Length: 155
Image (cartoon, rainbow, N blue to C red; front, side):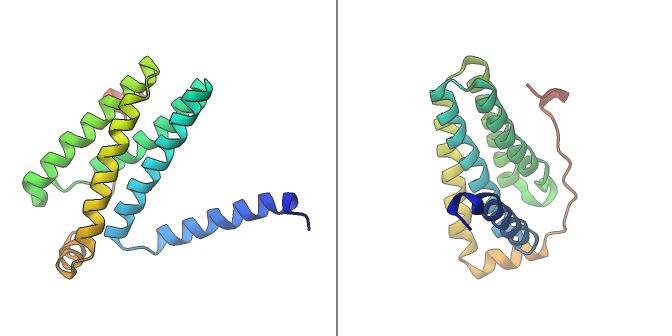
């Protein structure tokens, strides 16, 4: 089989691996994967913006926003205290920056959100390296996440 012919099969295999990885991962690692996914979408959105592919850029920004919305919806405000409140404000701020990037076709807000997500991801990775963090995460009740559109409208 030619290398070109393997493309669809390779993509399928990679997607199946990712699905299995997400389905079998612990809660902390899932958060890290979500941050990585959002960053990946925003890097691709920047490339689309540079190429003038505005619909492609908007679609990728929407995918990153969906991830941020899920992270926000999954916060346990009762048990999370000040940390959960700060994360919520940060997630909402990032959402506002992504809307600005789409409306004004600017990449500076994308860079800012990428930096914030990367910083959060690094903090989660550090925390997950500590056994106490795993213990706390495993004690948290699982909340069903509900995706919330910003103001009921997807821009």
